[in-house]
Amino acid sequence: MVQTDFLLRMRRVVLLLTLLGVLLPEVQAQDPQFSQFYAAPLYLNPALTGSTGQARAGINYRNQWPAIDANFTTMSAYFDYFIEDKRSGVGMIITRDVEGLADLRSISVGLQYSYEITFSKNLGFRPGVQVAVFDRNVNFNKLTFGDQFDPVTGTIISSSTAEQFRTDYRKTFVDLSLGGVFFTKYAWLGIAGFHLNTPNQSIIDEDSPLPMKVALHGGFKYYLRPGVKGTGIYAQTAERSISPAFQYRHQGQFDQMDLGLYFTTEPLVLGLWYRGVPFKTVANYMNNESIVFLLGFTNIGSKQALNIGYSYDYTISKLGAGSGGAHEFSMVYTWSMRDPRKPPRDKLIIPCPDF
Image 1 (spheres, rainbow, N blue to C red):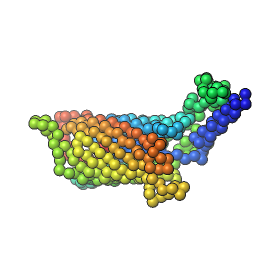
Image 2: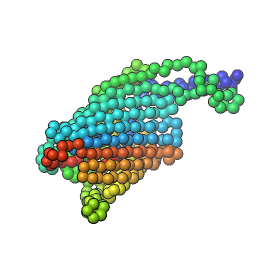
Image 3: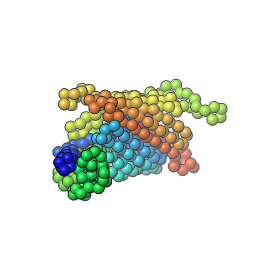
Image 4: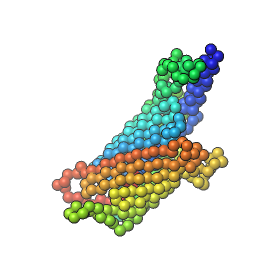
């Protein structure tokens, strides 16, 4: 009986700590992130909606710190299309994120619109907007309590518990984001502001505004001498290029930067970049998070393209490599939906990497 009471008290302590960790209004969290941020263009910046000039559909999956209980899994799916006659991009993105032992879940559905402005033959600008609906809730099914354990062996003997607690913690809110991208044939610079209306995200009816996030990203593409893929009448020019790129994010008290480059020798894409802010310390520790490695496959045709990427984040922070780092997968398919009877229009394409 003593052991049972002790286990029961300990499980209640665990529940209390979990609630404090995920429910208190004072807790501020960062938005989920993707290492392959250019393979998640609508998540990166609403101004990139329709940026390929064609139709595009993609999925992203990220599993961060899989070796520990406090892990994060994020999935995203999107579709966008460029309406040539209106010089407009339209799209939709669905994102689902699950955090921690108590399964703090967040799902959002966003509608996006962008418009293309051409200043000259070599300079363009695309503003974009996103309106999204978020739904957040907590799932307690993963928690275990003292009456589910054998008091002697400590093993779980029951899948149900007599503990009574609320299970209807939920919050739904509307979110507004804006972005813009300047671009040439060889370079781009974009900025986006998310959660501009700082909606209340608390699921226990307290005041907990979601901090605004500002993201700055850019880079340039240096084309090398092109190669050749295929043979005979099927031979096509194959891209060879180097693309240095960066992304900087600020949200609440958090800052993060990705800095690296992509090397494309079609059909392969290799990527290597650093995540962290070395000039800013956190609790007297250097803000170094991870080194990211990417292996991608790209198949670019005249009217369609398929890109598949895998990346791994090797943790260099105090959390250590024992966390399992992060595994990320992306797949993007682009195809033409324009009327083939219409003559092609000269169009300045943003030269962003595919991953």
